[in-house]
Image (cartoon, rainbow, N blue to C red; front, side, top):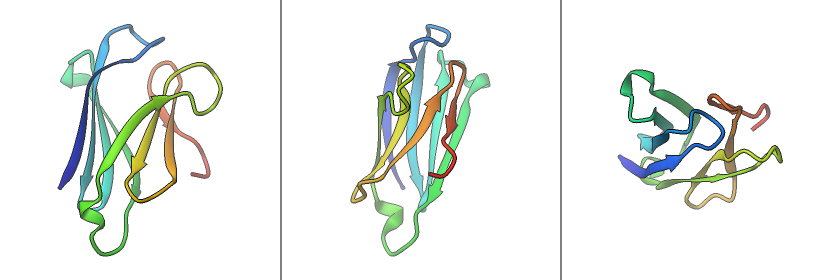
Length: 102
C-alpha cells in the first residue's frame, strides 16, 4: 500500500476551516479522503480510476490544489507517478466533484 498525506490544506471559499486530505493507492484503487475541519463524521471519499498492470499497487500518488477549470477556486488534482495525466476533482464550494470524460 502506498499513500501520501497532505495535512491541513486550507480549503478556501468553503467553510473556512482546514481540511486534512489523504491520498491512498490501495492495491491499485486510488482513493482520496477529506476530513473537513478535523471532523471525521463528515469525511468524504473521492474515488479515482483503478490502476491496472504489474506493480500498479506500488505507484505513489500525490496531490496538488490548483484551479483546473478557471473558476478561481482551488481544485483537487491527483497525480499518479509515471503518468502525465492529472485527475481533477472540481471544487464546487461544498465538495470536490469529478469532471465528466476524465
